[in-house]
Image 1 (cartoon, rainbow, N blue to C red):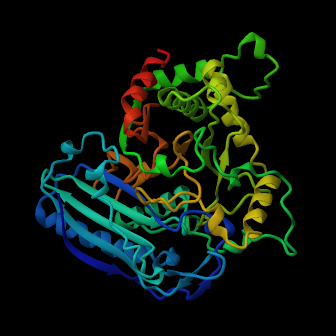
Image 2 (cartoon, rainbow, N blue to C red):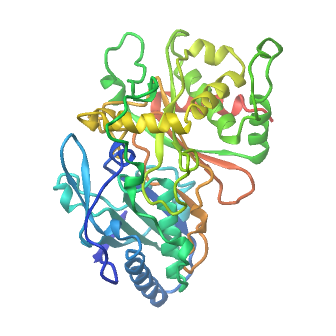
Image 3 (cartoon, rainbow, N blue to C red):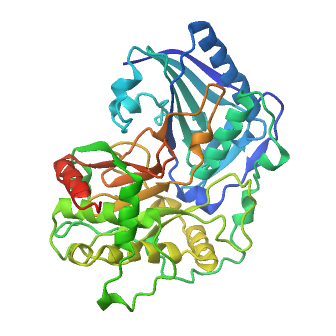
Length: 457
């Protein structure tokens, strides 16, 4: 049980640029909801220090909102399901909360209902002009532990940009100043499509409807099924075992050209995908696809400025694939499907995809999934028979030291739908990985058994 003690609006500490900031097509395409994140700290400070701690967070957030002034603004709907950003310094929201619970009671911090309560709530029933783009909830536990839960508008930033902001805020909280090379770059027009708009140059299967269960004409029945969340631990040895297995190309498949060994992500995500499909036990002819968000900052030519603040993520999806092939063929087949989806994202393909989004009269039809549990209005349900596997392995979340040490855990505060997962680095930094996953309850036990049984040791 979490009790809210106070709510404050945090304004930038100095005057900031005003006016309208144009959003990119990548910003328009992502969810307009807020991405939930929890950072857990094992502090042992007394009550007086905790009061100082909260004031330190408020003061440093106020200063962080000067270079990151778009986060203090507000969105507004315009034409075609699109938005624009008004830089009006209306501020971020900071909530102080308390829980009688102890951190140990949250177990492995899987995004269950108890963990969801650590993330600040947004009233999506109110006008969009009233939504703070950044909300923070600082929850103190009876054991002395602390959670900094955040909800940042996904329209404003992807995971990499969010991590850069949180690390900048933490640096200010520690009493340090930001260097010139740590300042964000806010001109999102550098991603604007050329005029006149060029027609798409590729098929862009990532904007097509995902497969449905055989015999179904929509996903409504699957969307209504009960789901549950879990946290999977994969040791360094297991990760290396999966990589070795993925990189074993059978003699009959020697025509497969693998220019470099499959990565940790490709090996683990393909194992996850196969085990989920096996647990769902559908017909061999059941189509399935995996979707993942790919950061294209360094894939563009020229690459984007290092401090670019915004969304540089595009969903890519695996090409046509059925359960029978995925499960009967070796691990390398599934890993190869993921590699193919990743390598499809060249400079020209990305620019063509952005042009495709720009060409849509109503961008809502290609908008990706939402951070709301049980939200059934999304045009593209990514669950059964499909999976979504996000990659947080390289995001620098564990640098978020606000002055009382690094977090003991950082992860999603919510997984909204069936088949949604994130592969993350472990806080132990020993090469092991964590996987947060939500799956239909009827398949979870079978899946977990298969996940570890089929793991090479």
